[in-house]
Image: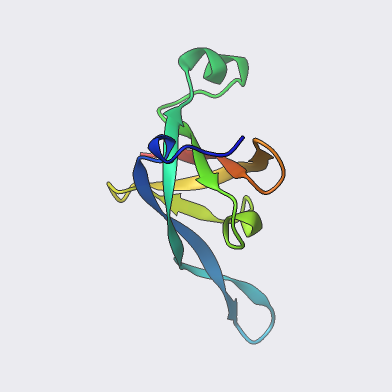
Length: 111
């Protein structure tokens, strides 16, 4: 039960904040590209947004990625950028379609 290549119809850039040592503590610095991957995107319906009590003009979407050593490390501290340079903040990451098959990323882009 793998992922069909036809489901992954766009390129996305995975981004992670590089650690920055300010002399007192290590904090998250600027976001830098972690890698590019093929992904499938599906927008979350208005009904789902209402049930989740999300308001506003945020764009919420789910991205399907193949599992690999990079996508397996994604967390809510990371970001994802689409081909239109829209930056999505990752909200949730979960493994789908079996062990080490796919990663589903739920993310929000704010205008």
